[in-house]
Each structure stands twice: as C-alpha cells, then as structure tokens.
Length: 272
Length: 262
Image (cartoon, rainbow over all chains, first blue to last red; front, side, top):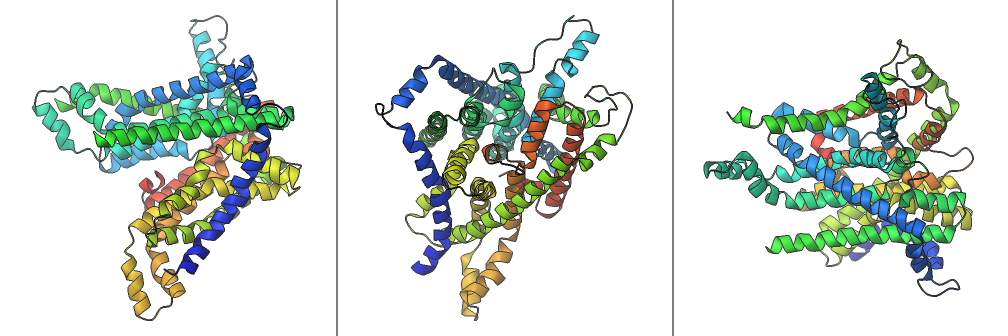
C-alpha cells in the first residue's frame, strides 16, 4: 500500500480522536494542576477530604465485591454452558447475551421494583409474616451492589464461556480417569486453564463497575454516591468544574492502572 | 451416573439463570397492571400503559432523537473505522499496533468523563450545539467496537484475493468495493448492530450532553423514573426488550448469535 493512501485512510480517525477526545481532555484536565495552589494540590486535597475519600472507597469496594461475586457465580455457570452443545448452548448463550443488549436503565429499574419499600421482596416477607415492617433495601450500598452484579454478570459469563470453549473435554476426562472427582478436576484443571478468561472478565467487570453511572444513580440515591455520580453532581449541581476534572482524571487513571496490571499479570502467566 | 454427579452444577446454573431472567420477567408482568403505581403481583389486566407511552410527547421525541443519533454515530464510526481497520489489517508497519491501540483508546476513558469533557469544552467554551457534542461523544464510544469487529473479520480475509482482482483489471477502489467489502460483510453487519445498540443504550455520555429539547431516550427515562413510579416505565421496558429480541433473532438467523459476544 502506498504511504499516501495509508495516511489518508488512517488520518481522519486520528484527527477526530485528537480534536474530540484528547484535546478536550487536556483542556478540561489542565486546570486541575496548579491554578494558583501547589502542583497536585487539588489531588492531595481530594484524597485528604473524608467525604471524597468515602466515595472513592465505596466505589472501589463495590467494584471489588461485584467482581468477586461475578467470578463466583460466573465460573460454574460458564462451565455448564461451555459443556453443552447445539440448541441448548445457543439458547443459554442467548439468555446470557440478552441482558447485555437491554438498556441499563431497564436493568436497574427491575431492582427498584424488587427491592423498593413496597417492592417484591418486602411484600413477600410481609405476607409471610417474617417481618412486620418493610426493610430498607433500596438506596443502600447493598442495592448498588446487587444492581452492579446484575449489570455485569452477563459480560463475565460471555467472556468465560469464550475462554472455556477452548478447553478440550479430554483434559477433564483425563483428570477423572486418574481419580479426580468432578470438583477436584474443575479446581485443578478447568480453573487454571480459564485464568486468562477470569482476568479479562474481571477487568471488564471492575472497570465497568467503578465507572457505571446508571446503577448508582437509580439504586444508590444521594447518600450513596460513587465517583461517576459525584462527578456529575460536582459539575452540574455545584458548577465545580475543576473538582469534576480531578474526579475525571482519578477515574481514567484507575481504569488504566487496572488494565495495565492485568496485562502485566497475563504476561507473567504466559511465561509460566 | 454422570448426570447425577452434575446435579449440583445444574442446580447452581439454573439459579444463576433465574437471577438473570426473573427481574426482567417481573418488569414485563408489571406493565399490564391496572393500578396507577407498580404492584407485583398485578391487579387486573390492561394495555393502557403501552398507549400512554405512545401518547407521551417527551418519550416519543427523545426516542426519535436517540434513533437518529444512533444511526448517524454508527455511520460515522463505520466510515472512519472500516478504512482505518483496512489500512491496519493490510499493512505490516511497525507502528500499526500503537495506532490500533490509539483507535481503541476511548475504551479507557469512562463514558461520563467523555461526556464531561465534550460538554465543558465544546458546548460551554466553544459554544457549539449540544447535538454536535452528542454525536461526537457517541461516535467516540462506539468506534472501538467497529475497529475490533471489522479488524477481526479482516484478519480472516486473504488479501491475495484482492491482488488477483487488481491484476485482472480492477482498480484499487473497485477491488475494495467488489472483493474486500463483500468478504467482510458479516463483520460490518455485526459491527453496525453492536455500535447501534451501544449508542442507543448509552447513558453516561448523554448525561452531560443535554439541553433544552435535547435529551436522549434513556436519559429521559431516568428523569421520569426519578419522579414517577407508574407502569409506563415497565411498558417501555417491554417494548425495548421486544426490539432486542427481534434484533437478536435476525442476528442469529444471519450471522449466529456468537458474533455479538465480542
């Protein structure tokens, strides 16, 4: 391919990325450094503020717990799907992919119906006389966590099935014929072989969970802010654009750090 | 014997699938309730909430905006993404890997941050219309899907076929349109579907980018939910899910459902 053709195919995309992603980011992030005070002063203040620190910690906590729950629920289920074939497998895959293509407002709204004061869970428990007052389930960290797991479990499933499809049936059969129980064969053979899939899925879930906006806004309420809802509130309700910029860079750096960490870890796995 | 040993695994998977399906099923049921707030189980049976959705001007106009936005953003992403993937897939320059990650870089910027940066810079500082910001924001978010999916199908393509077409008298453009495009057609369709759905469903980018008369469909839905709790939201959910099912059916019949799992 001639160099001029190559450049003319690539350049328009690069120009748009530069004009509408990189340059705007630089312009809005620049004021967060300096602007009078000491270098990084804004960032030191962010991590020194107990309220911001609580939001930051809550975001990381929900990201970590949601990722773990998705792995625990996803591993056996993905294994089950990957060992089916034909029609059964297509149907199970379709059921896993369907939520991914359904709007996240719809998926969060379902949990408002289920966890609300007069929701499904409370009406059921009241009718069974297990409780005599409705439980506060909605607008808590718990409801954000449930909504986040519900949002990202399909992504974990699809990723894990993709990596488990490459594991030959023979290896588990070999383990079984050597005396391993199904559970031991799963833990000692399937689990290590699906580690790359768990890593990729884990990073997708974690980075998605710490940046999701819909779930915390609909299921968390004002008292349970995450970074994504905080940045919107700082900018739109309080016109604190520099503060929002600080949060923006913190979110970008967290995402990059997690992805980089995963890549380094995957390289180490490869070498083993 | 084998089936018996797998009982635990089957039961566990069934519970997970129930967890995935039940909430959406509950929404669907509540859309038919007669009461003015959502109840489960429902009392009575009515289609009136579906009528209410179609009669609502704010829902219908934001739906129109979101559909149009998704079409334009997707077409722009394809127009930029297909040539770029072609150039990156065909050549073996040393810096191709770096360029490819540059095209994928919007993945690393959270949607809410993309919306924030575009709103602050384009709309507030440059005084550009909100719609321009929305279009560019959605384009940025869906470009990586196009680069990945089209790139993956170009990897399967044997570029020597294109050379044959050229030696048989096609010029570069003809060879591309007549030989390359048809061969990566399924990849382009899958990329279109993914990009369209992701733009239509996107919320974080659109949160900042709104203004008088400009609010995307999911954003309008969020503001509605903040103030009301009636079954029209359930009815909208059912309609959206019905469209998703129809799209998935079409994809399954043409490309196979696995093509959306990338």
